[in-house]
Image 1 (spheres, helix red, strand yellow):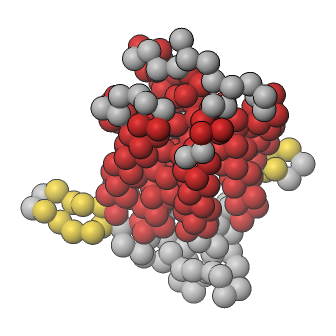
Image 2 (cartoon, rainbow, N blue to C red):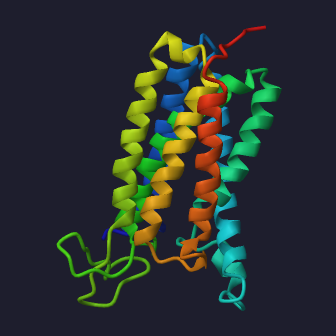
Length: 256
């Protein structure tokens, strides 16, 4: 693991922060690219992604603290500013609300905003997850003795010496890169761009499915029938994604 890339005087350059920054830049590029396909002003993409990125990090940290409220007793304030501890769906939900508000203010059709946001989310998340992998911040999976296991003994949240775990951040990065590529491919097709909410549905379904399955390998408490909180949310989002795919199958985009 490489929690810290280098030290610039008193300023440390951490791998997690660096990859999150790169993920935000990649998401800006993705959204600009998508806006051009829909003949929207690509310069609007930067402010949307930056605002969503900041609020997403805040939301992910807040939900993490709320989930572990009791176990963090006496350390809650420190946990808010620590370098480890994020819950993805907290960031996803808060960032989504901000993007909806921002799209209204900038007069971007909500259907197009939804469709163009998902490739950006998938690409940005894939790169950001590499930061979790490099820093070893505790988002790794359960113990394993298979050849797929890795040691995080030098990470921010180290595993015990000699213990191997599933590198779930790496799995998520690979899967989300594949999802981003697929969404990039289908939005190039004019027939799909006329049905932007179906693109949104595909992206939502695939991202939820990815999260649902990777959770079986992660260290998270189970809430219902052996499923974690993240898996229950993923099932709901996957169902919503399917609804968007099939409900809007025959509905095409109408520009005002």
